Length: 106
Image 1 (spheres, rainbow, N blue to C red):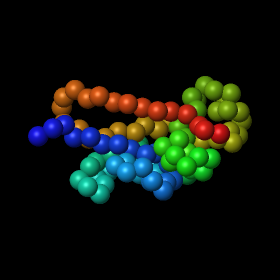
Image 2 (image 1 turned 180 degrees about the vertical axis):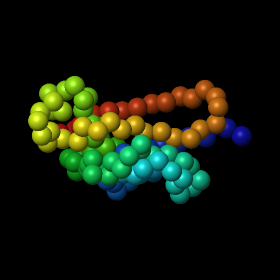
Image 3 (image 1 turned 180 degrees about the horizontal axis):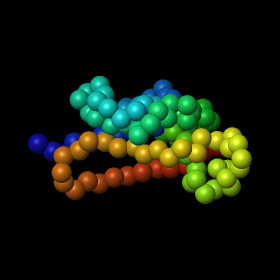
Image 4 (image 1 turned 90 degrees about the horizontal axis):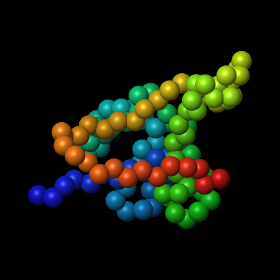
């Protein structure tokens, strides 16, 4: 039996690229297909689809909060969500190859 592969598309969707699982910022827990993954807190308000391109892997994303020491979070009333968050997935012990793409196409 070969290694399992999980591909996630972070954002609002829709998922047009075959083989990807949509993660729209939901809290960590069991999901469809028997996989347990998610965010340390609800991040659905941070999910985006810029719809700037036909390639959904470039248009969709979940915005990570900026660093608490950034100029955006040091303001008296920040206009951005500054509460820290992390994403995790349950996996068996072992070695894994992880590939990440980050950025905003806008």
